[in-house]
Length: 192
Image (tube, rainbow, N blue to C red; front, top):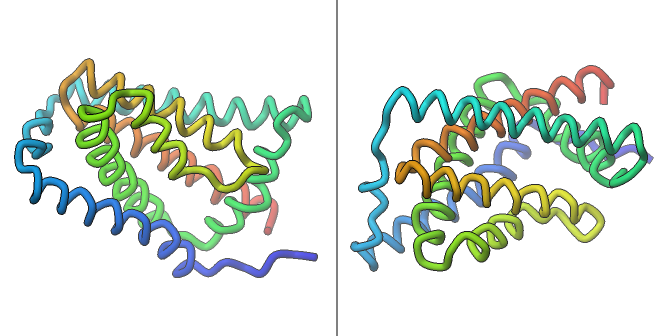
């Protein structure tokens, strides 16, 4: 039995809806707790841009490597199923601009909330676990939430080192963008 095709609009709304919620929570948090305003963490430099691009590329490459490892060894095969049968069909109809904007929106909003607001309050472990829970697609695909939790810890470390949200934002964006491009290509290659 094949899955019904997911439209471009449905995929966009599935990604944007939680991002709107995260953005609204962040705005309300900053409104009610002005001392937590993340504006102070938006210092930028070309070095931050370079480090973010390099880290995001490395993380995406590691994720792609894990996908191939899971596919070849049949270990964590649920991850292969998640990518090939759930995520890639959802990304099939997205355009390049969709991938770019969705990657930026999710990278920006999630970093402001999880690293800019949560991390200073509750620390790296709890903020990373919260991030992993946001990316928990169900018990069968638990490995994806573990990956997201580890990625969140890396993003928190980047934020801690640089005292700039731009570094984890750029790394997060780069990782998401490359991942979404690969999922789109996977779907189109398999003609899902």
